[in-house]
Length: 190
Image (cartoon, rainbow, N blue to C red; front, side, top):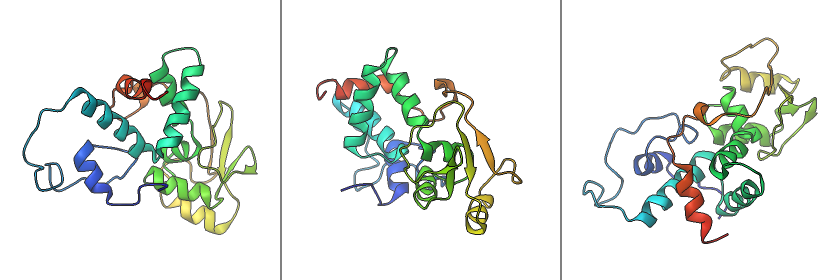
């Protein structure tokens, strides 16, 4: 199974607010399912699993992709949790979402996959492309691309370009997550 294509509000009710998954707010506040109203005490394993699932569903990653990002984050010097979040935030689909060109990361992934975005004047259709500071993102010079992006865009609508100024800090990430629990979850697998 590649990506989760099921009910997104169900995931939001189970894991809490995930800004990259959907912009909708659930009507119900209890967890989904027959026993959602009953509150159980979570084990340490369940807490770490839930944090990992938040990360996976928010960024639209498979289990294998997330493991590869964690392996890559461990190789780089610094706090592994912060580096993991920086790697995920610098993905092209996430940058397109943060610019306001799409309402969710899944929609941004589709925009990138359909070749509507150019990076440094070359068309990139890989959502996991790692943006670097200094990259210039723009919308492809076609009527369909400009119409698609301009209905969701909330910055300069005339030029439809943006420049990556630097690597994002932890404070700018809206996702309420304890990244150390994710690293601890994978510590026995990697």
